[in-house]
Image 1 (spheres, rainbow, N blue to C red):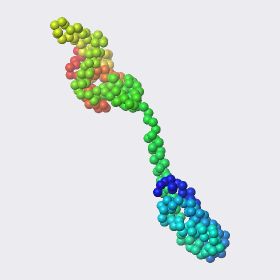
Image 2: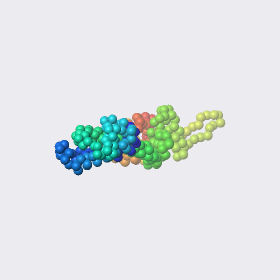
Image 3: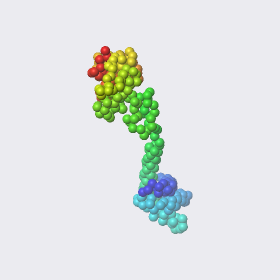
Image 4: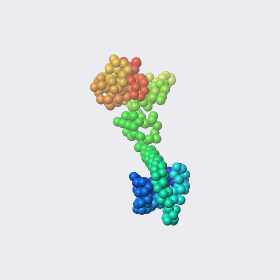
Length: 289
């Protein structure tokens, strides 16, 4: 049955349960003769049965149908007889009701009210889950996307993962083919060398000969002793993860990550694997001499 209807009737069902329990307690341990000889007990039981019937009158048909074991029609009829024809009440029948009918009525009402309580608790739990999932999400940041926050900073949620990576983060190339990666790195390297003055371009000759470029000293691609240590280590150890390099050389991980990224961009190092399993190696065509 709908939870809303049960919620409206819950108070009436509690009234029925409480009065039925009180009526049963009044005659607990008594015999019929004791009950018959005690007018106060007879009146108290009759009043409680009247309250049970009055509460039953206010229970909706939907709820009454959901509890077929409770005889709502007979309970309402008993209430009418006690309230409107009290002088005709047969207390022998009232005694039989207290002995035979109150205990099953109490048991059935307790079972149904416990069921309503469980449904209410489950509905409340679902509302809490929905309220938590409907709360606005925090904008994604470079840290939450696994990027280098020292370079990229925070980023809006609607940017793609490719654009979310720092320009110096090698993972931005993971979705590209090997040929495209080589092409892009070559273009970046050429621009960088031209800007630094290490690569001097010459205007085309009048006879259409190709442009000549000055030879680049590979050792000049290493910025300082830290990069020379990294390259020397990789030449000896072979492909190695950044974490192992940092621990072996006793260099902070952040410094290792930046230097490896720069060495890769300059064409000194290559990578094997992806994401957390990436390992760096010195390119075969790099001598450093």
